[in-house]
Image (tube, rainbow, N blue to C red; front, side, top):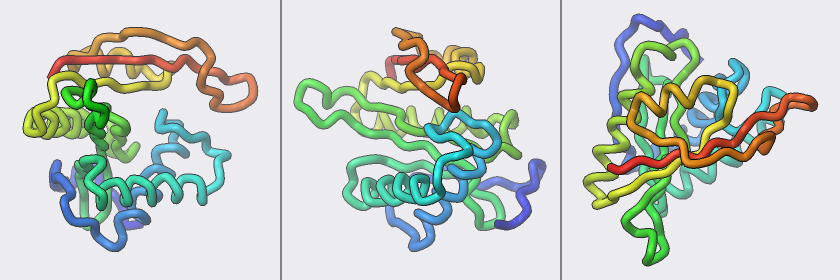
Length: 179
């Protein structure tokens, strides 16, 4: 990993159409950095690295199969943010999609890159003809404010559905928005 400079030049957002051979490694590394910093990305710091890598491999396979759309940002040839948009597949859901992932390197958070990735997802969703999006977030991180400011509406909560660690259960929060 190179040294990420919070004030340095960041490229993107870019839509990934062709998978780079190192993409799965870069995704797994970024997921790990976000997780270790306490980010709400689906893992806990105690989770084995091979589990993070398996998820990264699946994202890459889904990109190759055109099942998802991957949008990235980078700095100094390093992946520092990504978002994954999954369009609905069933006939009654083809007008919808899910923002499955949105993550920014902890050293770059607070600089607007999450919003830029989010906005790029909206552009991609419109280009695909999607009309509605959904996402699921973990409580306890202020994500309600982040997504609310971006036009998302909280539709429901499942209290304690996410177990970060023994005795540390968080709400699973469902959001939707029109594209």
